[in-house]
Image (cartoon, rainbow, N blue to C red; front, side, top):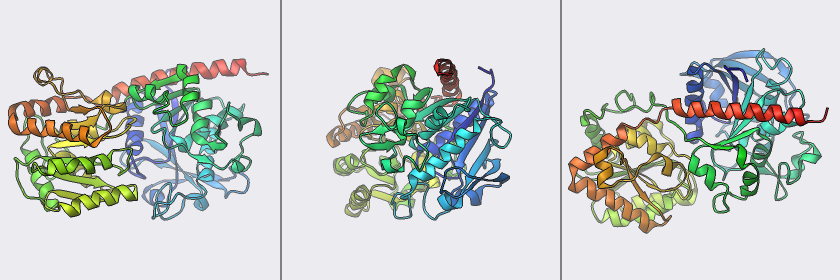
Length: 498
C-alpha cells in the first residue's frame, strides 16, 4: 500500500454545501485530518442547486453518459468552501437541480427517483478508479459514506478495471435505501447480484446491503455501535450480513471539528469563554433566555436539546419527562425539526408552558451553537445512537450531557460519581432504559448537582472541557481501516478467476 494514499470521499452531503445531520460535519473534519497526515483526500458530491450556487468551481472535461436513459453528467472542480479540500460536484441538472433538500422536497417527501440519483453518484465514483481515473486523478481508496453510496463497492466489484480498495462507513444503519427491484437493470446491477449473497434484501434492492456485502472493509462510527448492529435489537434486519462480515468491521468513534466548535473563538456566540473563565458562558445563557422569552436567572437550570426531531433521538421521551422537571422550575430550550408527529408534541409542550419551554422548529446553525453554549445541561436521550456529536460539543462548551448509555453516547461520555468528579474523569450523566421515567430521573440528578454543589458542578464542567475529541486519533484508525481494505482487495483480486 502506498504510504500516502489518494482517497476519494463519496458523500451525499458535506458542510457547508449541504447538511441534514451529523454526516455533513464529519466529512470535512475527517478529510482535513487525513490531509494533515499527508494523504491526498478529495470529495465527490452531487451538485444540488443550493450547493452549486455556493461552489466557486469550473467545468472539468466534457459531458459524459453514466447510465442509459439518464441525462449526461459533468464534473465541476473546485475546493470545499472554508476548507483547503479539493472537491468535485457531479453536475446533472435533471437529477440534482431542484428546490428542496438533498433527499426530498420542501414538504419532506423523498424524491421518487432517489435510487437513480444516487446510483449515478456511485457509478461516477467507481469510474474514478478505472484506467487513468477522471479529471486526471485516480484514487487508491474509494470511501463511501452511508446508504447513498452503498453501490460504490458494488460497482467497483463488478468492474475488473477498478483498482481501488473500497471502504464503506455506516453512519446510521436504520436508513438503508431500499428500492423496487424493477430498477435493477436501469441502474446497471447484474442479475446474479440480486440475491441474498449480494444486494437483495427481503425482495428489495438495497443500497445499504450492497455496501455491507461488497466493500473491502466496513466501519461504523463508534465501537459500541459496531457491536450493537450485529444483534437483532439494533441490526435493522442487516445483522446477518454484519455477523458474516464481522472480521472486516471496525468501530471508530467520530471526532469533532475543534476549530469550529471552540467556545473560546466561536464567532456565532454573543460572548466567548473557556475553562479558565466561564463569564462568557453566563452571558450566553442570558442571551438564550432572552431569545426564547424565558425569565432570566443564572440559578434557573436550563436544559437544551438540538437535533433531528425523531423518535430515534428520543424527543418523545423528553416531552414525556419534561413535566416533572418543569414543576421543579427547570427551563427547556429545544431546537430542531423532523418527524411531523414529534414536532407537534414538542410544539404542544411549549404551548402548555410558554414561560419555561422555548422551541425553534427548523435548522439553525447559529442557534444550535447558542443552545449548546448557553444551556446548563444538554440531553441526548436516543433510543439508539451510532455516534452522536452534540454530546461532544456540549462537553467542550461546559454543558454536561445527560444521555442514554448506547452506541457512541456510551463511548464519549463518562458517568458522574463523586470519585469521578474529583479525579477529573466524570463528564456527564447516564440512564439505561429508553423510558421517560429513566430520563427524568437522570435529568433530576443533574439538576440537583447543579443546584446543591456549585463547586462540584464547576469541576464537572472543567472535566468535559478538557476532553480531546479531535480527529487526529480517529484519522489514525481510518488509516488502519484503509490498510485492511487494501489487503482485502489484493487478496480478492488474486482469488478472482482469470
